[in-house]
Length: 286
Image (cartoon, rainbow, N blue to C red):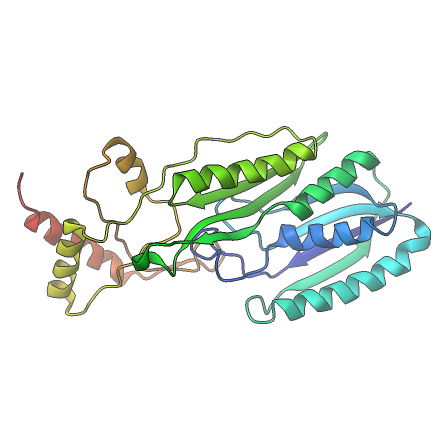
């Protein structure tokens, strides 16, 4: 067998909720796509697969080691070059800095063939990206339900896959979680679902939101942007305990969240503090 290492770097990545609709490349899905195409043509044995670090970030790099018959090495190298060119073309707007690498590496223990095949097929088949958009008129441009294949990590005797699902409709969240679970169950994997955090639906008639908007206009002389976001907020936990409580979430300006380029616009921190104090001063007593 001939051993190869393939890697991909320089993807845009981003927040697995707020950026999931931007059609950015997912390193895990790209690497598993090439592995699947290759194993359907020849005897491929997986050695290791490592990509992603956080459940709430789109993986922006990754590395895979695998073995193939020595007679196929030039065919695989040629296929990788064609594949890289095709993927670069597919993501020529969203991920302009992606880089593809392939190199030979030393012989290593391989994963048993049937298990290797099932792992690669599951990673190829599993849902990733936007599942559905919000149907409410006020939120129709917002993602309702999504899934992010976030981490693949190879340990000594196992491969661990971490996926994160989001939705502001709990029944759809349950369905998407079960869809992901079913794919890996078919592959023979042990699957665990954690409790996550509850959805929080934006209320179009929120009196507190109106108060916050009026306060913002008074303090800063311009209209704020009011929108729902496809991301986890502390309000979801509060609403689970107090479902009738009126709530609004606001904060400083952040850019490129969950990437190495993440930034906080410092002047907006003082704005948030002033805004909070003014809201508290004007909330009607009950």
